[in-house]
Length: 112
Length: 119
Image (cartoon, rainbow over all chains, first blue to last red; front, side):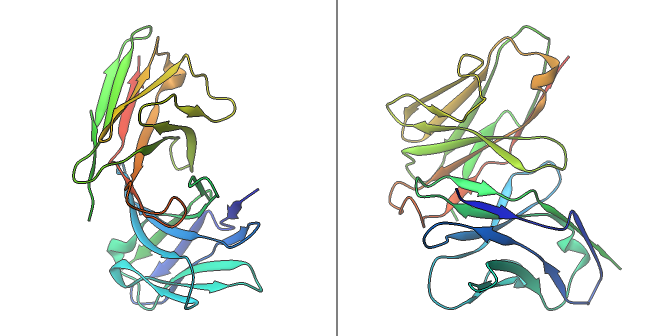
């Protein structure tokens, strides 16, 4: 069965510092991996996805993610965090039927 | 980007009443839509897959008679919470996939969510 895990419930960083939100996956076959962001009482916004090709995927709002097959990871990164990046982040994997399976979410808090 | 509209964005109802939530794809056709439920600061739990013109597919543990799903057109899916009780209070989110896209790689677009509070 497809699954993703986000080992950190919360990540705290200072504004201007680099940030990493971790995600590991378990899939049979090729992984189709996604990152979404959710602001309070809002739906999910798509950040980026990995389907195939370059391991480093660039997405919205300056975010990027690195696909690492040997470590089965797809960590989300940003070189310089903004206070406005504070939100709930979800990693997800798409199963063969097209359904998204979400990780438990990581709350990112960026302090000035 | 593509837009998915959910209505209402919030609703308060009395216990025992039924509530309908609409999910519309505004600028694309969606043969498949998904309904999720989310508790505060928790992940999204897939409830069911809504298929245009056919019965929805429910995930294990989700009562299909409790959560009625209708996908009558390529741009509209509805979720009706029947005989709602306080434990049904939650944030419900729908998502839709452009029918032109691949089932596996096509992007899913999410609605803004509907917060249901049952008194």
